[in-house]
Length: 75
Image (cartoon, rainbow, N blue to C red; front, side, top):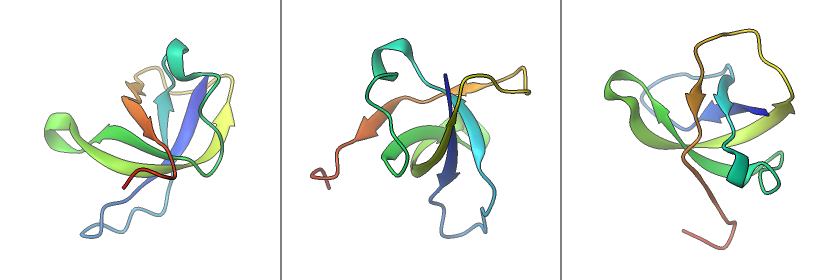
């Protein structure tokens, strides 16, 4: 399963979703609107983003993997 994620990078205008593979251990947890942590940019630094869609398959062959999710209660 894959998540479409809008990354939260104030210095960049990122208005398009990026596709991330959801690890098997998170597949039953990740939902639309959830805050997640994903690798992004040079060096794949970890940043927050928001899930805007879930898909079973994705066209791009080279996918990055979501690292973790954040509960709404976490800051």
